[in-house]
Length: 242
Image (cartoon, rainbow, N blue to C red; front, top):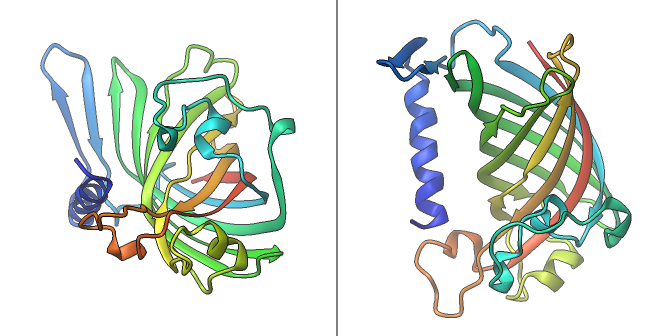
């Protein structure tokens, strides 16, 4: 399965949710509950606004979060790169996003997974000054054994990110000498919240856009002009759920 097919499949799931009413499906005897919220029902803790700021880094999102660099043929988990060992660039970013959890999965009353749609915009400054716009789907893992002390979640995304111009940095790392305005949006994040204030989250996100470079012209990635990668920002943000 290609990244493009994953994205289109998740996109179809979100599109279907636009006309769905909230439903709960329980697997008999399994304790598994699937809750389909829909998109036009009133918000009930499943909508959120998010504001963030950060600085550009050339440390990969995977290495920052302890995921081996698959672009180097490595797989599995590694020790996360501590933030004081990040390699920084002279560019920053500020941004804002709105998201909606359209479905969730629980087991015996414990929240396990959330399925979210997000749309956002951001402005770079410093060595890069372009604007960014994105739409993405997030898969969020919610259950951790220490959640009664500090509520934690981990989420990964797939989506599309568009920039208003190609910066000198993205030209250098593009691999094709041209870059691409449109790229894949892969931005893993970790959230922390107090158990008595679950609506307020501290968010650590690797804001990342990238393409797929393939010398043989892999079908499906011309949408990204066969560019290799774009800019990455290590960000800290605040999310409010309502």
